[in-house]
Picture 1 (cartoon, helix red, strand yellow):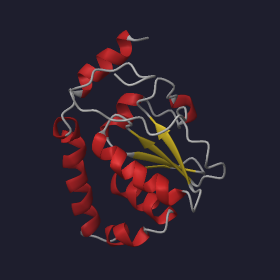
Picture 2 (picture 1 turned 45 degrees about the horizontal axis):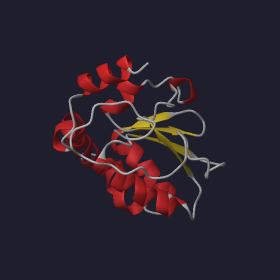
Picture 3 (picture 1 turned 180 degrees about the vertical axis):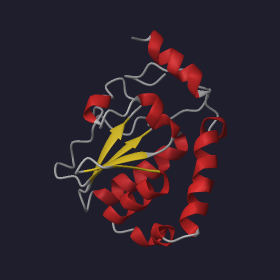
Picture 4 (picture 1 turned 135 degrees about the horizontal axis):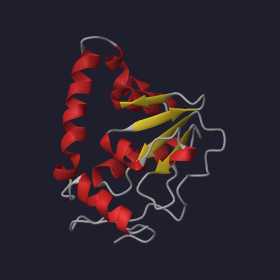
Length: 159
């Protein structure tokens, strides 16, 4: 069990990424907020890469939804179960973006927009979202974690 978290874990180990609380305060003038699962080892690879790139841009505010301090009220009312289902990002104007669009927007903010640029166009956008949808549906199993229902039950019992 990670410090500050009350959750069922498999034997997958994810090291804490920093001493920051729920929200990364390094980006005071953020343009996009990334809601990420800090207990997902594959997700954390991407988050850590974006966090490193963001040091030069300061455009992304990182919010770990697996933190006991996660607050839907601070994140457009998006509850834990909803954001565990697929990636969500929140633009500074309050607009919520999901799926491949969220990745595209995040990557654009750190100078890597070319990576997802082709996903702006059909039929690539539809195909990319379909592939992401499969990943999102099975990511708990793929990463060796318990089903979301077990994690939700554990979170409720910790309150």
